[in-house]
Length: 437
Image 1: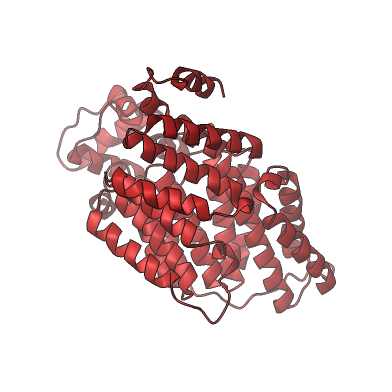
Image 2: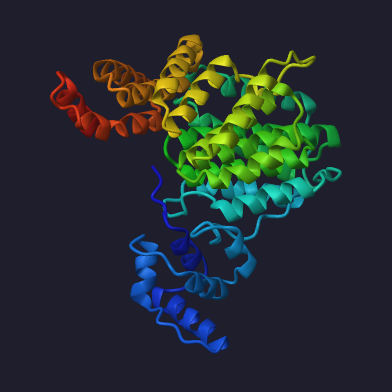
């Protein structure tokens, strides 16, 4: 698990090398510039960072001045989403992508980073990706020539690594790291044609995306975000806008998963503008529906669910992009059911979720574990406690077997619901199991 800085104010302050007292002093100075007085002190900043209080609108503007954030950003985003979760988005282009790849691999081992990009940072990243057209790829000229046959071998290996059954993927982290290091080294120091270079960047994007999902499943969210950032830059250099749309979709899914659905909306909007395959568009609409449901935006959620269903029903002339080829009727059913849960309709949720679970192939056991946890929640909210217990136990056993920490965490989150039903046989035993797993 990450050991993250969980509040963006803490991150913004530490990134600028400021103590609590120094930030408070900058806020008071900002007030003085406007002919005002402020009582912001070290203790008040500490309360903001520990979620014991929220700043007033006036104090937010003083903080923005102290941190160098434009006042208009404060008006566009609620607290604390306008705070900088990272520096300005890295420019897109080959010159910056190798650094992004190297930093992503280094950050994967960092134990003290912000949990993930916030709404402001993610919106900036998505907007920069959308407005920057891919340029002509310029090959590195200071190394040995990269043989296209070597790229053939790497592509075959990466294809195998990224399509292994879920249960086997828990053993591939070191292989993913080694392949990404190899590919990054070839990009940085090799000599290659534009066509070969494009293949290398797409390999880097594929590896970084897969490794990012592995870190995400472990609860290493900052590492996942950095890897996806590197994947987005790599896909952009390769000129693959569709792949980039998929990476933005991953960022959006992570934001919704971590309880910040508002941050998901802008990336998904940009992604929808740059992909045309109906399967891809179905997935993007479905993930946006999830974000709207989490925000309680019922009509927007229903609109996007309808769009997702319509897109998935279209017979395409070409295969779906690899990043969304797994999208199916099962995913649509379960995630629409999860939307119903978030909108307070467990009666509509359970039939959709259970129906979707029954359609899911065994090769997707990690997804099955997540879907079973959703089903257990819908059963709990419908007061079907014994059924919820059986489904939860199945989800926990599956998640433990395949090493999916994210699934285990999701099942643990059901504990408060079961606690209200301790009188039911086996519930106390299951709660104890959750406590110790």
